[in-house]
Length: 344
Ligand SMILES: [Zn+2]
Ligand SMILES: [Zn+2]
Image (tube, rainbow, N blue to C red; front, top):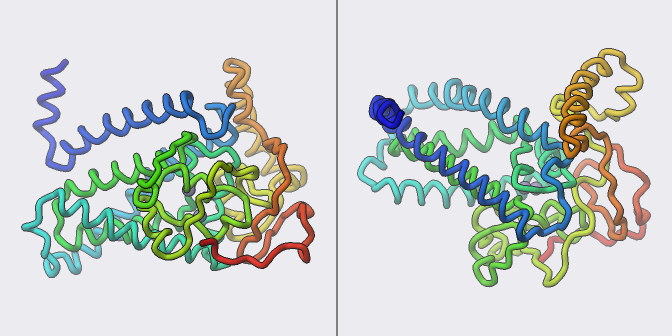
């Protein structure tokens, strides 16, 4: 068995061999984060089988990632590399560590600004609201990203690695760093990193970013390095306080395809299910599959649900660019809302 693994490993190219190493590290990171979420939870009582887990795991993490990888590398980056490839080989002599560090920092700087832009543009907010739609944020919640958001961000992330002539192993190494750091900042772990939070981003600040609080709506845009938020005046990190409201202040579809359709045309998923037999049939399949699972694993029942009970409604929900399309009557009236300003 070990010998056949060794033979397989040696038959691979450098990227394949690196992936053979990064994949177990990724799985180990999942286990570590799951243990830490149980041992020191940020929000107590958040179940493993939470609303939307199936959509995040099956549709976003497995299916969408698989097809977008083919699209981004095969149909966007490969033609670019074919066209420009030979002209920009300026990184050949850099050590791999320096190449990885360069791309991690520069892409994170870009992501900060693009993410900030998405929160202020009514058009681009439609490509980001899905990411904010989960009310139970945990290790896997960050995987929920709209197709367009991923295509833009990953093309801008990986095209320079190829075009600047970096070592191809930088791609799987960078992908591992993205995946682990992305899971970490969304993990339901009560991290208190002290002064380190000025540099390294973690759940302390990013879980606030997923809160539906007006005071944090224009804050905590950083992904990997919190230093961008502190430098550019968008950091929000109150002491001894945790969010009370999570997710979006308006109804958002639970289904993967409906979530993408909703970014183009606004509708009420629940009303559509009541009106349209075709949509009901489609929805019914998921309902029955998850119902079957729920009968066998009672904890998995929550995967079915339309609604997540939210018991605390004390704070003012954050208005989104373009308005809140399906909002329930707000807790506070429009006129009583304070003006939205960047948090500092
Ligand atoms: Zn955001
Ligand atoms: Zn996030």
